[in-house]
View 1: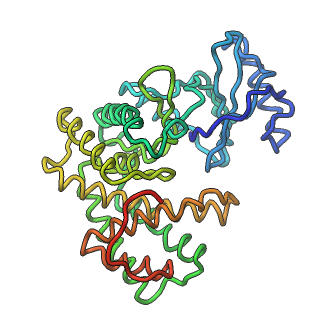
View 2 (view 1 turned 45 degrees about the horizontal axis):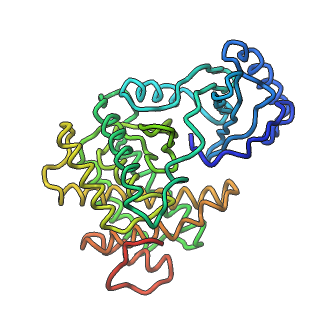
View 3 (view 1 turned 135 degrees about the horizontal axis):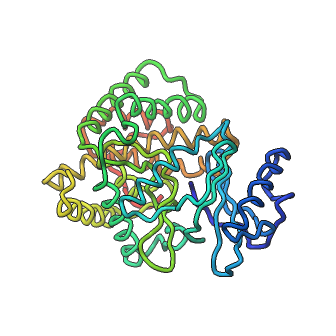
Length: 364
């Protein structure tokens, strides 16, 4: 689930909800919500769009007879979205002590779920991007939730974040960002540089100890309620993989960039808490931070490809607007390590820029 700012609170009848395009599905939804309404004290006539994410999932908010209580309905068409992983991971998170949506009802056949409502504001909504001191307590809360999640890790419970998956993710960059978005044929020296670098990235990332990985653990998916802890959303793609992934995702965000001193400060705080909790992080922070940077590089290359695909294939252009942030992340990390010099040259070729002798890590 990706929680964007909810729509205005004006009610809409379920016969004409703002996002329905399938009349038959709208009718099925109406029958379902009216059937479960008495048990959960729902007011079906108050259903309205809450948010939609990059997938085919959509979310509605519905009032209850308790004026202070609302619920969330997930609309996940079974032909396009499998809700089982969401339900499974929600249970794992609850068992770990992480605040995640509780599954109140699940119509598995039709892909409708009733969830408790974790609020209207994401961490991203309330952060002032020029005030790291004010943001620090929220990041501390996020780190505490992340450690609880990782401490609950067990093998063979979630899909493995293995070599095949890492390689599939990286392939999105040459296919969609370079080939489709930039219109560049990936061949010759460019192909050689990317393939050589991708091999190093996968090798380095697989060397990290494995724990539960959220895969989109970032402020846009963390909900700020009236009290701690933060609520965690959009976890249905969770895997068992490198411990470095989620802290890299949190501090090198898809929609928000910080100066490096703040990134290092919060990464140190995570590392200290993780060590104290007995999680398998490297005893040397320098080595750990290097591993986080290499894991972040994997994510940035993947997300640049995904955002290009969302724009070019799925008609969602707002995502590609954040591409410069990812290119800056990639350039910054590639500029630190001699082994990544081929990637830096490849990025210069792809972006049509001159090779740089230095880099700026800060905001894009």
